[in-house]
View 1 (tube, helix red, strand yellow):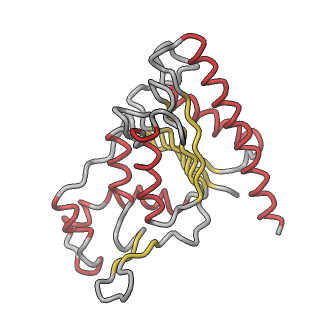
View 2: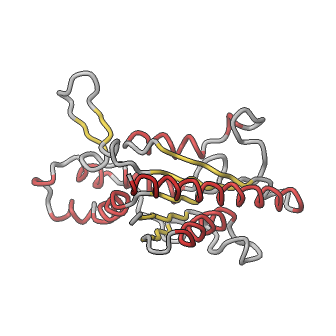
Length: 230
């Protein structure tokens, strides 16, 4: 069985295919999960909506607790890390992370950044040893085989590789860098554009993105089936 972790981070509550002012990223992430379950109905899906229920931001107390060895943590430290522990547990249990991450002012929503800050955890997702020669930090999920599917939406257009606005697109780099740091290096991304333009250009962009998602689901499901049969 493959476990999917479905994360949405849009401040909008519904998908643009079901609500007049709904979220395009929610629409794309829901389509990915729906297509996956059509092909693999027995797979487990965990839903985490950080857009509507954002994790608490990291505080000084959180940092103190996270860098205190588990056996030395006081009760307040365990309480400070309880939500982070739950988020990390979900991530560790997942084989595929499906993340709907719209572009807000050229980067990810603050809600998703709070999720990242809670799951990049010393001793749980990355290791640190100041006495270790060469590289004191190392990814703890490097051999986990996890895949990230990043589904985004943008108001303007041309944010892709080699395009006019690539340099100011901080969504994919902002998400991929910390996840690669903890060892999640297999990633796929699809984005819809032209949200602020609307009309035919937006419709065509969403249609193209949905087609890419369908093809990606088929490819990933086929790869999972081959690994399972090996």
